[in-house]
Length: 436
Image (cartoon, rainbow, N blue to C red):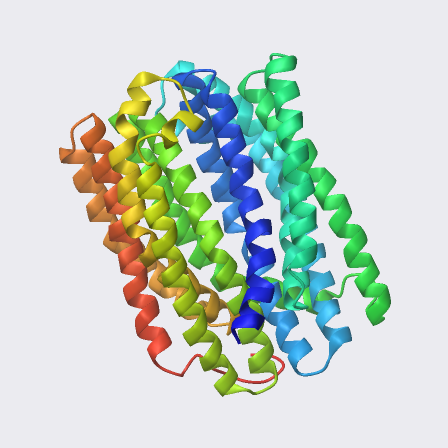
């Protein structure tokens, strides 16, 4: 079981880390332009991550659907489900990109940022919308490959895409002196390159399985319906993150810049630990498709052990690096002074995050999206008073940033640990068969 988990999780780690590495690269390059561009990236990045994050069901809904059919022996049906997911991603991507381009200034203004921050944030967000369809295509294609128990291919594509993103950003930001908007343009070009590669790979799988490339109306509707609960689940997650960014904006531009760095670090660790959740999704879906309940329990136990243990190791490393890690992102002395305590708080919550992300992956792999959606709303409700307390009483300095980080990384993630742990302890979520 450990070999199966690591066979999927280790390549998935590289592919998952590629997305936050895009943000890390943006934050590091933009951060050296000054605190104002970094604060602008914090607002625009929060909006963009929210839009893209809400669509993660294109991957998380496709993976268990494909894995269940694969476990039941229906390879053609498995690939066909993935192809329908790709068509759904294309349609949603075009609609959302069009709306996002038009609404970019209004979305940025909702955070109440000062004009010197709002202008570059709007420009970054509008340009980034051009890459949104590509990102959704990547999500859906990833879901298909993960369901087919292939996490190596996404690793290769993500690695090349990340390298291209770094080079393009350097050219546009510094070479052409486009500033924060150059960062957005470089990422868009890299995203579309990745999307084209994935479409070619999906076409190859479809031909090999005899699944065809045309969309199926019933399949697209089924993908959309299954993704509805996952959409609500993700919406609650993004609402909590947006609320935290809103509170950070109220603390001040320097505090917002510090929170952008802190959340970028948190996101990188989350994606790293989520590699185990991806392995759990694929293995749980396949085992349920094969009606193997004992296999599901084995996946749950071993993935939890790996998740908490990996979180502890990463937390120790992060705490050790906390005094110097800020220099990767900025040279602004006021921002640097705020970061060490906040980074240590993120490190303390990392083992808890490993527990949460694994259980989330197990229940997604089982198709238990309704429970995840409903408890996601409950978790958000538990976080709101914590965020409100920080906004009302926290000082506008490093202590305020620390309190906000603790409210999110320990309070909100702790609420998720409670609701997920209660569900995983039972067996009502273990429904077997080719379809839930």
